[in-house]
Image (cartoon, rainbow, N blue to C red; front, side, top):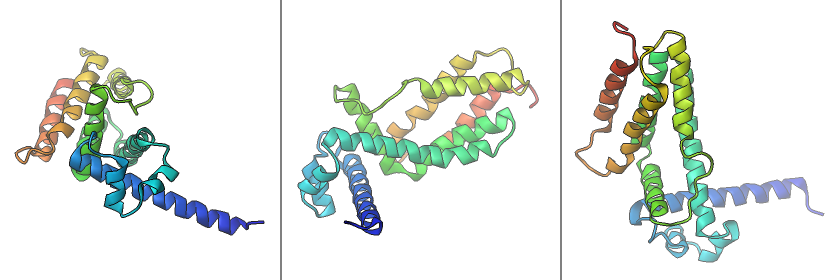
Length: 204
């Protein structure tokens, strides 16, 4: 009978190997694109056999889904504390925009990989994205409406339309990260200024 310590050690080793595979897959997709990121190419990057990847993931679709899940999880962990540290509507909106764009700036490979996956999905590949595609817009619209009702924001804009516009500006950034002329910090400052003027009460 195996000891619990032995089982725990095997689980730790397995999780560590899965994490290595995911990181190598992110780098590979970012480097060569979704179509060229075969399991064999990812295995070569890691210096392992393709069979090792197949032991941990049922196939490329399973691995791609894990990339998306982990990148979204990391993004939430990066942004949430920054957003929740604020108390007023304008401060929260500023932190929301800045933290989204700063995560992209600080994690270019992860964002490049997700952009490649999105492009492949549009072209007909199996989508690894789950849930409501407009979930982020819905959550942001509810947040805007709540602070609108509290008087932190102007009452004369439509929260849903504003949320769509904010998300559109944020979601346009990943596709430009490879452009050396694109300054994401300046982009973030301009986005904050535009949406502050578009949502805040005059004089705020």
